[in-house]
Image (cartoon, rainbow, N blue to C red):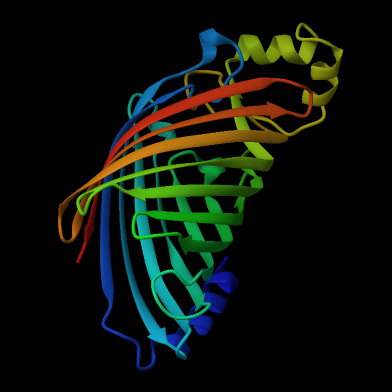
Length: 291
């Protein structure tokens, strides 16, 4: 973890020389999540209110007429109502590079980002380091419409193997500037990798004992798991490999020249390698301030 932070610091240091004045971005969001626990049995599927805050500061430097580089620091906090063991804070550096293919507002832009974040989770086993990377190609089609496609990767190295997860995604988005003030967007894609799921002890015991079928029994007895109490006494957290198809819709009116309100709906349908399905939904109201 220390080595990763040191590497990003050394990478960012030359970018800060002759960089522009730092920018500051503040975000706050409140939302509601269905099946936050990513559980199979309906009786286990826990819904909860979520509250998030994030602050980011960054510097950018024009390296040439078409290339810009940036570096910054980000910090955030997540509070989960009624399930406080899921609460966490994060902090870490991020670097980026951007290349514009041509001149004018309709030229395509390729952006690469990478970051490393330290997670200070309430659940001891979830504490650890998250590394991320992404590559995005974006283009404005006309004054009102923009499109983008992103491939990204994320991995979390936790204290407990039950929380060790990683994934790669391919997703796209379409943005419509309805007016100077109103903006709408939609997007979706697929995630492949390892993600954490949760179950109450009776359900987990039944799965291990074969009540959900021999394929589930064999697979669940082969993966690491841990009693974490995240959603109640005796609840188990375990990582499974699989994929998830997801999509989202967003409406974002501008409140001023530096503030935006975002209304967002997201849905994800995940399937693990033995066919167990998990559906999650989330509604969010967020506020973005750029200073």
